[in-house]
Length: 446
Image (cartoon, rainbow, N blue to C red; front, side):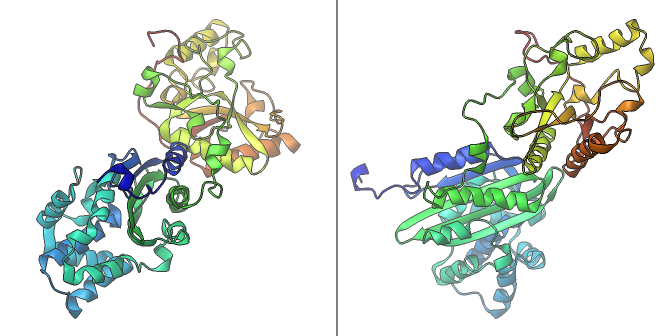
């Protein structure tokens, strides 16, 4: 068939780019895969592998129906299959899994063209990618036997309302019927939220999967799902591009190959409007001179700390405030120079209390930070930065104390703990156990 004979492509290229831009600005770990009505794959990190959660239950349903042949399941079988899909019953999934086993799931994955699917000993241990699920849902009608096809479609289109927190709102508004399954659970990184679906409108068929992990809450993950669906199914003028609008077009993220290999990311990846003024890159710090290793004004942190800091920024901006970073990741050589300065100038007593020989800053998990007004960038009154009792968070009163507590409350809300001896210093609850001496852009040898 010639290209001229093909129907108009859905979704248009502009909507695909909008979804990709949106995901680049989201926190957590996110993947998206879409097979358009021309059968072409699009996506954002579509090969990233995730633990399945309940997403695999659609595969269990399909494997079971294939196993019983070209017939409708009987009443006893429907009493198990129905709850597994309709309300995502784990007990029902256990029953079906022990009937079909790993071998049937692997056969289905091979038929579907999945390349990253794996399972061992329990359905909840299955791993897959967004591309795997987009390919599975694009072919699900052909995989289910003809006699039970309507039954399977009925289940996948009648998920209970309280589990319809992802695609269906925007797909339905655009006239598409959705056949889908979602999954959610906690992981070591945060909250995992998945959804995969087949969408139909007339002769137009599109499949899509969004897989996410490391979300600070279930609600944040479902917001990511809805954000993608909104950009795919809504007209561009109606699509809300909250994070796209928050990020300036001219924003250039800091870092280089060496910092990326070390696991450091620019905080602006998750909080584009965070302000930065690195005091150790200038003479405006306690030493009176720049510290070694600070050649660029890059505010870098490890991924989860940067993600949480973006959450703090968005929380404070609703109150008319911005974060202002004074120091984030600090190379080991800068910490060693700070220790030498303290010992040379008779401030050795501060080493081990206010100045650490190996700092959480060296891991990318600590940040020195203050508050500024959003409208003009003016710093709030927070008190001084002296090494002594005046820097204790609670050793203040009036407006200064209120401002310190505003910062402390916001940071602790999103996973940071305060160091009370220094009102400006906070450490993320995820703490990598490695101290880095990668410089902030100081020549070829970092």
